[in-house]
Every structure is written in C-alpha cells, then in structure tokens.
Length: 408
Figure 1 (cartoon, rainbow, N blue to C red):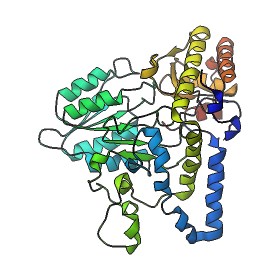
Figure 2 (figure 1 turned 120 degrees about the vertical axis):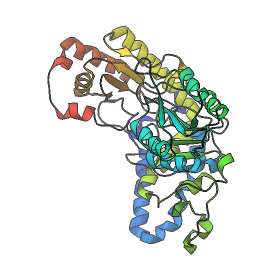
Figure 3 (figure 1 turned 90 degrees about the horizontal axis):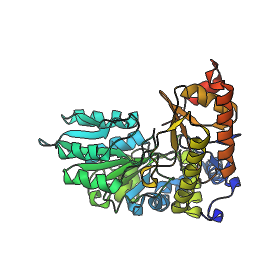
Figure 4 (figure 1 turned 180 degrees about the vertical axis):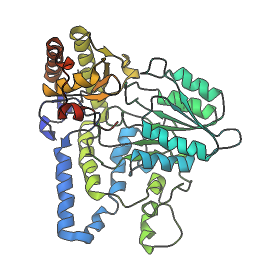
C-alpha cells in the first residue's frame, strides 16, 4: 500500500462536482497552475513587453522536471507545440526514406492525428503507411509489430506507449530494439502515459517522442505539449526550423541564417504561449513533490480496485484493458452496446466518464485526486442506472452530447 502522505492533498486541485473519472481526457485544475497563470498575467499587466526578460527561457526551465517524467536528460526534452506539430517536426527531422525503406509503420488503433501526420510524410517520401491490424478491435499483438518490421521496407515506426482506447501498454524497449534491428527510426506517442507512469526514453534508446500535457499532467486545455529527442540526434538540424529554436544567445541578432539551440530545444518553432505554458509550470510542481513512481503505484491500486468492483457487480460491461500491470496504462476501457447512453446516464448521476465510438466507455481513476470511496460510489451508481434501465431511455440531452466531446 502506498503511503498516502506521498500524494498531494485534495486541495491541490479544484475538482468539478461529482466523481471525476475523465482525467485521461482533461485533467482538473491544479491550484499551483492557477497561481502560476495568475502570476504570469500580473507580469503582463504590470510589465507588458518587459516581462519577456523572465519569460524568454521559460520552456527550457521546465525541461528538468519534464525529463524526470520521461526518463531523459534535460537537454533531450522541451515543452513546445502540440502532438501534431511536434510529430511533424520529428518526422521532418528523423524520417529518412531510402530506396530500401520508405514506409512508416503504425497501428490501426492509433489516434487519428498521429496517422494523419505520418501518412503525409510516408507518401511524400514515396512510401506508404502500413497499419498493424488488431485481432480483437481493442489491442495490438506486439509480435505482429515485430513481424512487420522484420518484413522490411520500414523507415520509421510510430507507436503509442499506451493505446488511447483500451489502455494497452507496450514494451518501449522491446519494440524500439526491434525497429532499430530493422534499420528503422523508433518514435513514440506518450499522450496517455506521461504523468501516469515512469518512462525510460533515453535508456530505451528511443529516437524521438511526443506528448500532450492536458491529460494526466493537468496543465490545462490547449497547454503546450512536449517532445523528446535522443542525444545521439542532437547534431541534426531541425526539419522544420523556426526562430524559437535558434540559440538563445544570438536569437535577437535577427540573422538570416539559422543557428540551432542546444539539444531538443532546437526543435521549437514559434513563440511559446506563455499563459498556457504557466499552466504546465504549475502542474509540474505537483509531480516534483510526489514523484511519478508513487503516482504509478497508486494508479495501479485504483485501477485494480475498480476492475474488481466492475467484475463483481456489473457483469453487463466487459473490461477490454489488459489485466497485467506491465501491459496497461492509467485508465480502464469498458464495452457496452449502448455506451453513449450508459455514459450519459452515469453523468446524470454525478459520475463523469468518457465515451468512444462505437461501444467504449473509458474511466480513469487518477492517483493524484481520486479517492477509494469514489470508486465504490461510482460502481453503485452504475449498477443502479442499469437496474433502472436509464441507459435504455432515448434521451437527447446536453449531457449526452458532452459525453462524446473530449480530446483523445
């Protein structure tokens, strides 16, 4: 049992009403983030353009805390952009099609934005996007990924650390090694893993990785994401150079020739959104206090407890998330033929899940703010709504609509 003193107080977050189980889509507001945003707003109010003296290297100052979350050196990570823009940047920088290998390998269950981005680069290089299929519609067999790599022709592999739908977790080291053995670059999307579990991107020899910060990191809607670039690639010029990736010492000389910053910071493009970046600044302070190892331990306790409650009391829903700890992320995925209506009815009872087409309900008990009693209450409400047939009612409501609107 994890020591509860290692976790933040509940007043470390401003939680919405009800039982919030959708932190895998949007994390709640940390009080430290609100304070950081208000501090940056005051700087803007009082100093206006003069505040850039403090803001100028804010992204770089966040790198040490981010590096701890992904198992990297500080110069290998930078807070910048979005998953989509950062993935385009990594592909432009690292994807090198050749006569022997032009294809990009991903999975049929990847989040669409990842597939849109890598397909564009595959086709631009004269190759194609190859998708590893799912045998059950929820998970991907790692051996099938390895078989595609061994078949040859792959220049770049993109994999999610955790699948956004089913929460299946992949062995980063194993598949990165398989990609390298096949002569391919290994890229990873950590959107559904950063802030929920430790990573070892540097030691696992990952070439590059991207993530967002509004889920388990709780940095706020639209907060800047981040990227990882292994040190062995730090001599590369960015494929998409931008002025914020210029070395800081000479950036304002406004020279027409690009001089890259050191490390992953060279992959920055445009001016950072300082107010949104402040949300990440505050959120990272929570992880500095607790440590991601303690977060992972508590997350597994919570998902284990919720899984047991669901299997015991709600057999109508089927959990499709893998059971072994090493094979799952921070949320559980449940299937039900009336998933949308079930999620809407659950929300009307004060429990906030997430829903995905066509029959998936996702629930995320998050280590930093979910209490054990809330899981018991959530399952009690689910059992009650099913017994009452509330999910069978044809109710068109704003609650039902909102149940289907969330990122990833």
